[in-house]
Figure (tube, rainbow, N blue to C red):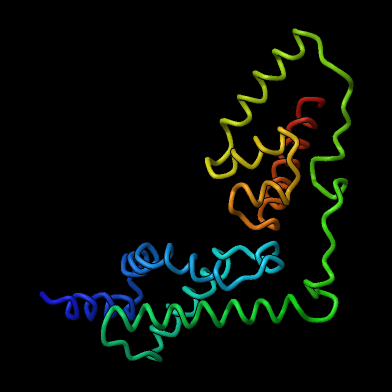
Length: 197
């Protein structure tokens, strides 16, 4: 079977709403499209928007429009060119959205330290040896409950890095880092309430 025939079968499956075909397309193209999106995003937009968010929108549009018969694709390279074009268009739209009016990225100021979700937790001086051991054990136990991709974010935060520095070190958007830290803060707050009651 030729490459073109294989692609036609995949496209027919996608038109029929086959999730396996959709997963294959996502797996085959995501790494390249993330690189395309990152190259096109300025630093300001990259702090606000994660390339993976752009790609979710691209894939959603692609799958709906393929099922509606909007695209005539003869080969895999046609699909790649279409995906790149859609990605670039979504990046441009996102940049335009985040550059307008009150959302204007050029007016962004660096994030104050007190704006970081976990910064409000007060310190209570140096712990004693027993408290330090308990804290290390509890921290390790908590870190094991996190998603593998979220653990480095929390570890860096515990080392004193702010959300901008964590975003730079992990390659994630600052908005994503802040969202993850906020979710973890909410989990910790809920766990504390449960312990108290």
